[in-house]
Figure 1: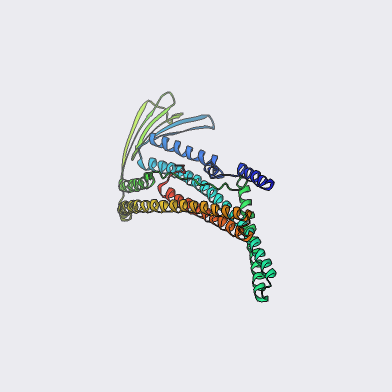
Figure 2: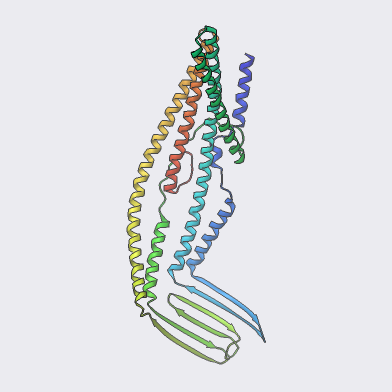
Length: 387
């Protein structure tokens, strides 16, 4: 009775200090704060690029002070596309890193769970093999049988050493991850979000089409300029070249006069290479659009298959849970029979080893389920959430 109480207290302490799978959902990768800030900055750059506003200021001193201010309004869609693409890539990279950090902690939980069950099963298996050897000696079995059982004992001892080394390795990883205690034997059911729209691919296509359009526009460029030389010593200038407009103010004016100056220029590219390059840019945009259509169909097909794989993995996980329950009931039944003198200790050890092996298989099923969910979330660009 006292021994049972000690084991009960020990199990309660293990549960109290164990880490469960929920701890993995709070994990964040190294450099997470910097990655979040990088994604925010990329988003701000995209917002500024959408306005098209920019500018610069300059200050200098030689014989006299010189200073100026330039404002720019860009109507170039390529600049906006590049900034938006960088913002989307930064956000997507951040989500990928968070998903990976949660996944690594979940698999660490499964490995720690399995290593503990495997080590306990190996220890009991060694004890059972020793009992068989002792029983064979007591029965006066032949030397060949005793030698075979001695080899079995040695093999069981080596198996225990391997499982202890594996458990130690996993426990070191658990400590390095900032966690403590053994893995709590529990599982979670994860929600499968609807796949996010592939804005990144759509933006890449838009960027490629913009590049092709720019290539054609670059074959013939018209630029205009209007400059006012003020008597107050300031120069005001408005210029346009392609899809952009700039306004600048400079002091001192050179030369200082009260007059307007205007200029218009046109540049037509006659190089055959420029014309073929523009044509090739258009063809590249067409190929990218065709590839995107194929990729979208393939993505939809893979998402359906992955959902089926996850459903199968979850059903196997539930079946493994039922097997653990059955094995635990059998082990408890044999233990009660041994207490009543109706079963041998070797039978109780065998039943307990079978229960621990079933628990190790449950941990393997949990790990397989986590891997299936991770593959789906990577393709759907979703986040880890509990159902």
